[in-house]
Length: 115
Image 1: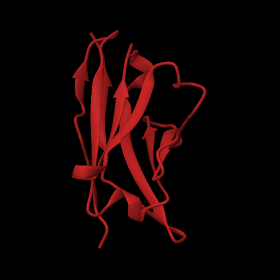
Image 2 (image 1 turned 135 degrees about the horizontal axis):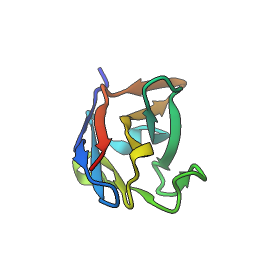
Image 3 (image 1 turned 45 degrees about the vertical axis):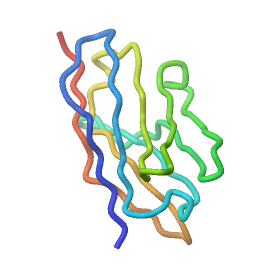
């Protein structure tokens, strides 16, 4: 059974940085890609970016200047590094892995940007 576990969320001040982790129960290479999403209260889930198992990344225009996705394949972990955080970044952040037409999700980690 595929499991994804996000961690690293918390409270951060505006302008700060945070790195989220997505630990996957299996080799990253066994998936087509791993993506990051977020959902703020009262809003739809929003795509942030993704990393393909071959290495390339893709980002949503809204965050590509501030967010970076990378992976450590030795420990099956995908990271979302976020800079210059603003209150509007407050949300639950999720990672998702896809392969063979299936999509697997983690439970999410809360990020709150507030002074």
